[in-house]
Image (cartoon, rainbow, N blue to C red; front, side):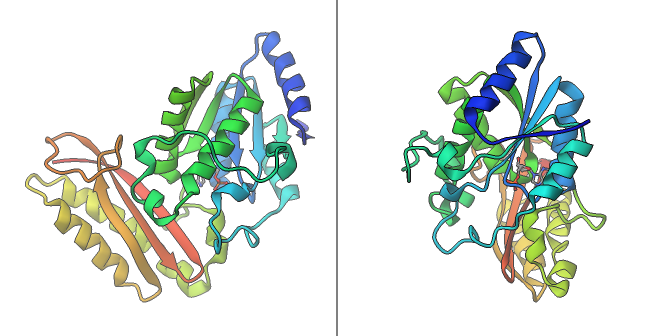
Length: 287
Ligand code: AMP
């Protein structure tokens, strides 16, 4: 099936309004491009339950802080088109910066829920404000739809869920499982930054998450001990510089202290490997 590139909101709305007025459903997968199998799994999920799938590719300047990798962020639109077309997407929305921000440089104005404050919110000031701003603009451009996001960026997923409710957008947010390499490393566009030695070390993220899951499942577990154990595991790799390793409540992203047995919790890690700053997470159940 052939895929069509659309660069303006007006053309996108025209195409999607026509689709919806014939009773068909729209699935939407927002991305920053340089697509990999993880993005592909979101496209698959959308295609499986939508009549038409639109994928957006837009590297959003607003969510990069000064000194982050905006300029070097990897891009390959031809490969992105091939991936989306081969997985059954019908439209690729590829707007320029001036199409998304026609008023010029903007201050993000979308209100953020408290879930945006800890973890990535502390380490990347302004990041979630930029994410919320662009996702709100993209969701408004697409209109009523199911929108597919990866659990790989778990805090972002929770921020988007809250924002959609707070703004009353006509969107069903669907969280999709993390797609991983054979050795457990979560697929990420930023894995392209890893040297050979860093790539060999990076699966320690996944091992630390699973060790935490096993520890949390034992009744009487201690949050501080589990978090320290993860940091020790990460720091045991010379190529790794851990930033955080936490066990939290999945709704608030705040420390999970004294949870009752059987509670669903989330374990999240962030770690630098040379130029690459990688994040990962896992759902766990308290013992
Ligand atoms: P990005 O292009 O990195 O902004 O990601 C676009 C979407 O793809 C976000 O919803 C991510 O959470 C999701 N995503 C990125 N990596 C993965 C992965 N390994 N598995 C599943 N979803 C992913």
